[in-house]
Image (cartoon, rainbow, N blue to C red; front, top):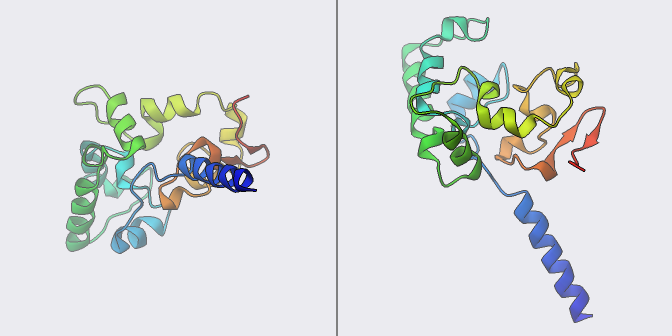
Length: 168
């Protein structure tokens, strides 16, 4: 009986380890409200500060939409994104790998165009990524069921019309 309990505890710990937070979850209500009203409020640790700054400077043409905000909100969002950007969150696995995948002074245009993100998704068939339920790599929550908690592990991926991600 002790052996069974021990194995159960070990199994739970291993499963929990696989679902650990790999990027700091969003903890700013203004950011959640302003950005999350149109799309998933991406964790700031998914982009370096230079990319966030570039994006914030062009809110009037934010991927084809006008996402302009007032001056005070702009300052609040910019500060939050810079203070929590990938290079400031190197203690989180994904943020660290994102920073390490970029060339010096590289400024990505989007999360989905970064080398690390492209590499992590290269084994997934294109039709699964472009299907209407997913739309593209920009739609993290379509497959990463705990993305809002900062969990981006393979074990937590459930692709629409495919199921749980298994590299086998």
